[in-house]
Image 1 (cartoon, one colour):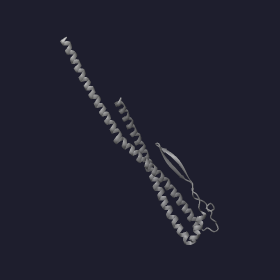
Image 2 (cartoon, one colour):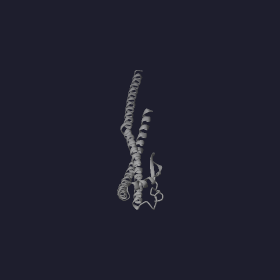
Image 3 (spheres, one colour):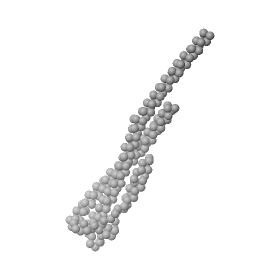
Image 4 (cartoon, one colour):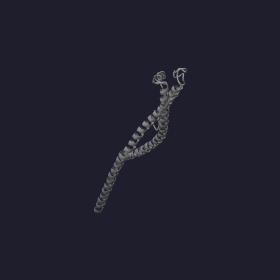
Length: 204
């Protein structure tokens, strides 16, 4: 019974390793796909920052610091994002979708007659920076979650392959050796009994 139990445990452990490896492979493929998205998002953020700070410097030079600060105060608002949960092999991956952050002049609360073109362009550029930041953050969140799950899955695979399965196989070998030894002892005893019975028949 112990031998059958250990063999069943070994079978389940091997199947578990196979499933975990397939899960890890799927997560790694997803991870590298998101890495490419992250690199593109970071490049977009770098470009948007360069353009935004150049325009900000021009607007500051022409309009002055006070005018820009007044426009910025009128421009404050909350930015909303949608978060959905995607299931990848039992792992819940957050999917952050960014809503449109670009607004019109009136939506920003600016006066069309007093707000300069450079200020408007600067505000639009920084809205693009905000969108790029949200896109980078969305990819970074997914990378962190998937990376943690890959590490956890790898630890489980290593534990099964290097600890659990070798231990079970060792127990199987030990039980098998004990059973074989008992079988040999039983055969030896049967031969002795048979020999005694034959000896009794001869003497009788």
